[in-house]
Image (cartoon, rainbow, N blue to C red):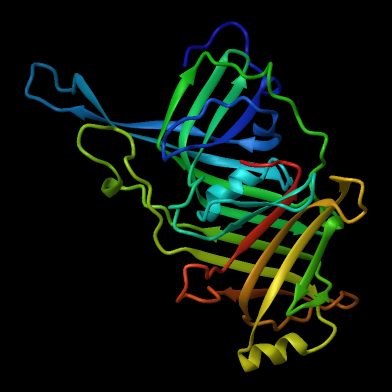
Length: 335
């Protein structure tokens, strides 16, 4: 990349996301819903090269060929009931099912799947500075993490793998606008275990799709990925919680499973009803406590523990079985 006399500042950037009609097919982004307020974005393109050795009068190689093109990177944002939906869908792999909840609100449901449903991949238009815009297509999330602690907004991080990237002259800044809806924080949150409300001080949810982007995902005649299949998915969940009783430990010893739910409901309303707030809800229908014991800390410290869970699919014998489901209520009719 050429360097001129003037530096380009990140403050002139934007990130826009859109659903692809099929894997790797870029969609021209034209709506305000596409705009994401990100904390960071590290999308990057690399091309493997190989120097060609040969017998010559010079001891060093003098030719080089370009081989595989790899496009990947991470995106971080605060959890948002509008802006986070497509990135979450690219991580879940089961598409988006949308139904009307009222005349002005809609429920968007995403379950863990095999990336065969609609909206199995996304594309981005990213302006990294004025005059420096890139297109990223065929994006799927290799791993997604949702975290929250007392005193913080809920944070989302996504590790993307893309099929391809292109430098653009296309600039969408004139048509993209930011929403007035605020991101969700720990204040908006509620946690239930087996239908009963519990108090926690933080949590971390990780979804790893183990996408296969090696030589088997490429083919003769192209330097980009031709497919991006997912292998076995793993889901990890843990909470930080004050230890007031031995209930969790007792359940751990019996090996009993239960359902857990995290729900973050905004105070900003979609309609006139006081119960019509934007929300993001995470359901895990079958989890097991995994070692909810705790260590003694220093004198005067509150007894707390980081409690991990084993998360499994609730019904593996049906196509509707899942380990994680995320439901979002907002005012967007469709994605």
